[in-house]
Amino acid sequence: MTLERILGGTCAHPFPVYPQLTETLAAAHLTGAVEPDAQVAHVLGTCAGYAYADTDTVSTMMTRLGLERHACVRITQTVDAMFIFSTVYLVQSLCGRVIILSYRGTEPGTLGNWLGDAEVGLESNMLSLADGTEKVRVHAGFHRNVRATWLPVIGELAAALQGRSLVDHDMHVEHSLEALYVTGHSLGGAMAVLFALTLSGNSVHRSIANRLRAVYTFGQPMTVAGPLPHATDAIQRKLFRYVTAHDPIPALPAAPWGPFVHFGQEYRLADGEWQRSPSPVVQLASMREVPRAVLAFFASEKRRASSRYTLAAHGPHHYIAALRPNNCVTEFGD
Image 1 (cartoon, helix red, strand yellow):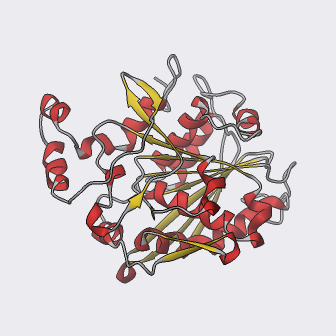
Image 2 (cartoon, one colour):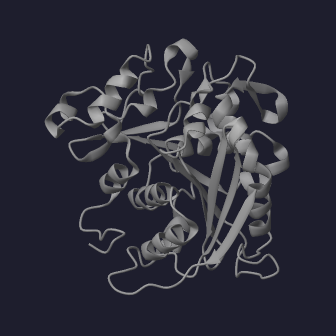
Image 3 (tube, helix red, strand yellow):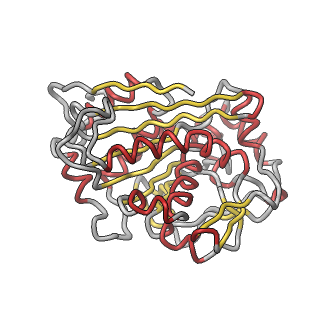
């Protein structure tokens, strides 16, 4: 287990992208709104995308977006033989009111990470909800990665609730934690959902769960099997899933591994705009589509557009670009 803490800096023109970002995040979803916030989606999508990078890069991007002089913490646990590759970032605003919790997705060059994604598990892989009175089957590989970093993450959030700085727990910030956002791309999105379900499913963590404003995921695979128990209702209202056209990952795991389902509110990119989908992505009937999606990655742009799925559509940079509001500067300053 490794844990790294750094203090974010300040930025110059053309940044910050959002001058009042802390206030925006602190106010968004305060009344339990069931519609996503475009600015929040862009910020969280960017954080989820750069969670594949190192701590300095994540901190730089969050500074540019508008969280100047924030605290940034990275927690990493790797156990190759168990297919555990769990990395999570916590970004705390300078005042302490807001924390973004972002899980890293599958690392493309790490075979063990891919094998963990494929380990769906058995019918007995259950997550307890409502203090154990209800249960739901979950993806074994995703769940194990969440559990691997669960305790230190909860420790950091508990410190934030006490008004402590995540750079140094002996230092205090102006406010205790008010608004918690959880996000991730791909595997990171699946971990974000399982974190939220675990958090809400145990009254021991109620004080933290009460600060959870929303969960935003991007290109997230399915994480739970149906039918869904009533205990998932609270998270359903707070979960916003974004899916680009031709992205195959949200349709996994395939049906032969069981009736896995999506829940929450799904938004799909259509004609350059994110639109609420009346129904979730359909689960793949077999794995035969996956090799085709891989081959489509290397095809021409015209060929990709005609393919049902292509891994090229899954890239986090595509999500970030599609989430950026019109006339808004990019994280690169363009």
